[in-house]
Image (cartoon, rainbow, N blue to C red; front, top):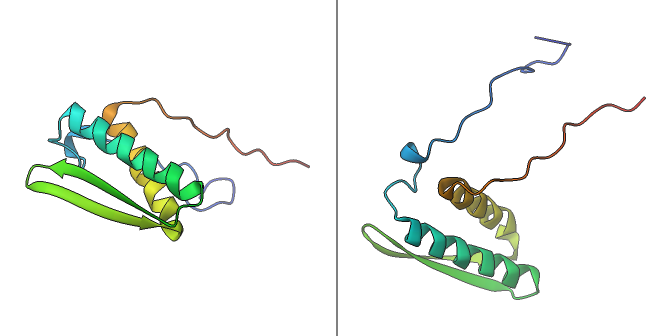
Length: 99
């Protein structure tokens, strides 16, 4: 316990592309899945009620349907794909207390 906050100072989990669930997919497959997910997110946020994403995986193609309530899940998938592809992400500034 540091500074009165439990868990403060714990190491951040590191992303390892070699052990990711997406390991083994080609860059082209990952890029296509990222594009599909981004277009689905744009469709959801622009008012469409349902968006489907299809991508090829080693054992065949997969289709996932997202609804408005799944925007957070879709956003998380986009971030995972970006990390797998090595796209630099944006980090939020550290929160500082204001007195």
